[in-house]
Amino acid sequence: MRIFETLPKSEIGLLAVLSLAAAPASAQFAPILNGFYLALDGGVVGLEDAQIDYGGAAPGGSMRLDAGWAVSGAAGWRVLDRYRLEFEISHRENDVRDIDTSFFAGGSVAATTYMVNGYVDFPAYFYSDVVPYVGLGVGRAQLSHDIQVDGFTLSHTNSHAFAYQVIGGLEFPIISRRMSATLEYRYLATSRPHFQDQGGFVYHSDYDSHTFLAGLRWGF
Figure 1 (cartoon, rainbow, N blue to C red):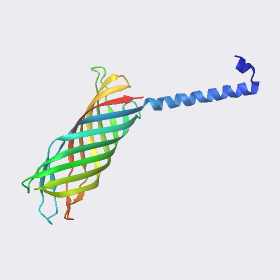
Figure 2 (cartoon, helix red, strand yellow):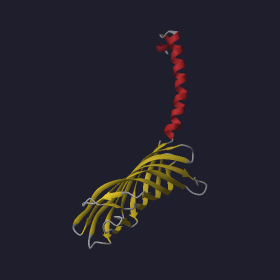
Figure 3 (cartoon, rainbow, N blue to C red):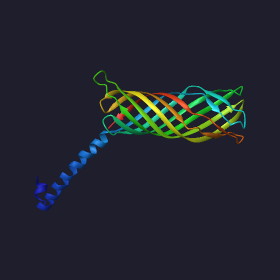
Figure 4 (tube, rainbow, N blue to C red):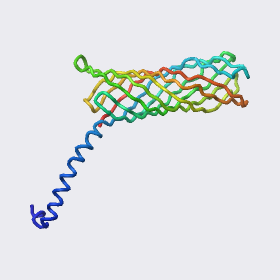
C-alpha cells in the first residue's frame, strides 16, 4: 500500500512489532469477557414465623407473614467450565398477617441483601437441554420492620445482620453460552438481628425465607 511505501523502514518495523504484541493480549482478554454474565430474577418469597422477643423485658409474640415478592440482580464470572462466582443484590418484602399478642397487626418486613455466591454446574446435555446447579452464598442483609399493632406503630426501624443462603436451580439454554432461562429455589437466613420499637425497647426477630425465582441470564 502507498501509505506504507511513504513510511521509513524503521517505522514499518515498529508497527509490525506493536501488531504482534497486541495479538496475544487480545487473545487473553477475549476468554475473560466470554466468562462474564448478567442475571435478573423475580419471584415469590415465604417467611417462616418470626418471634418478637424482648428477652422478658416486655410481652412479645410470634409474627406470621403473607407470601411476598422478591427481585434479584447479579453479575458473575465463569471461573472454570463448571464453576461460577457472582455478586448479587436482592430485595424481599412480606406483609404482616398477625401477631399473637394483638387483635390487629399490619405492616411489612423487608430485606435487602448483598451476597457473594459460588456455584457448581452439572451439565446434562446428553439427556436433555437442562443444566442443574447448586450454590452457596454469604453476605450482609439490611432488614427493616414497619409494624403496626392495634392501630399503633410498634416499630419503624432497620437492622443489619450476617446473611447466608443455599441455592438450587435449573438452567434452560436458549442460546448456548449466551442466553438462558433459570428456575431457582433459595433458602436465605440471617444471624439474629435486633430492632428498636417506638418506645425505645430492643427486641430480637429471626429472618428465615424460602424464595422461588424465575429469571434470565445473559453471557458475553
